[in-house]
Amino acid sequence: QSVLTQPPSASGTPGQRVTISCSGSSSNIGSNYVYWYQQLPGTAPKLLIYRNNQRPSGVPDRFSGSKSGTSASLAISGLRSEDEADYYCAAWDDSLSAYWVFGGGTKLTVL
Amino acid sequence: QVQLVESGGGVVQPGRSLRLSCAASGFTFSSYAMHWVRQAPGKGLEWVTVISYDGSNKYYADSVKGRFTISRDNSKNTLYLQMNSLRAEDTAVYYCARDSSLEATTVTTMDYFDYWGQGTLVTVSS
Image (cartoon, rainbow over all chains, first blue to last red; front, side, top):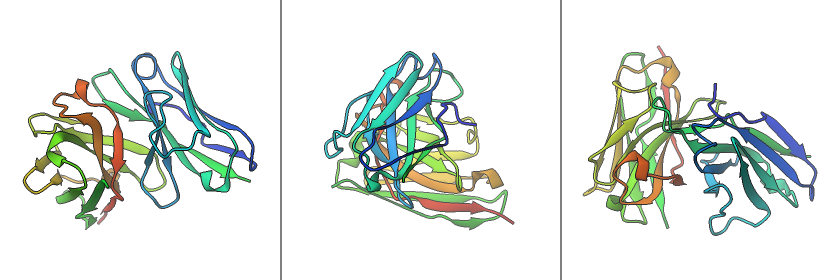
């Protein structure tokens, strides 16, 4: 059971805009930054968004992040076939039982 | 470019031990905290442990506390994970990851995982 809640799957057609949600609580998303990672099939996770809405160099501006209260979202516009991957949200958690927590991941399918 | 290469995974019986290594290159290893994150087959990511840049502070997830030990050798640019009393639920791909903060000593000064290795598979089975 992941601390952060994501839908298990999402889908879209090429060119479409897709959003993936991530829900948490006051001890994680509500009081800390949110990060997003992309994991292409058979590869290691890659940083996609940091500090809620910042993109590392090399990440296309088709990817954007936002946060409101205890929830966050990742939006992908102009969907491309190579965006088909698993996406994970993450955040620091202020509780004593965990420090960094993840969502269960969302598998994005490009139809 | 930053490169992290894990090794040491394999099949081990429950209750036994295993040590993982992560060889770092392309950056000043001794200036960054380092994490281990794992992913059970077909499952999501789980943070396991972190060590400060100088090795002075270590933090663990409850699921591995008392069984796993993180360490580093800055002279060899290598991170380690000693895993004892292994259980079936420890079966996962183990990734090492760099913390984005420079010279972070305590968990409150650490930030996010900016670079990841390719992972090494640990299977705990009799």
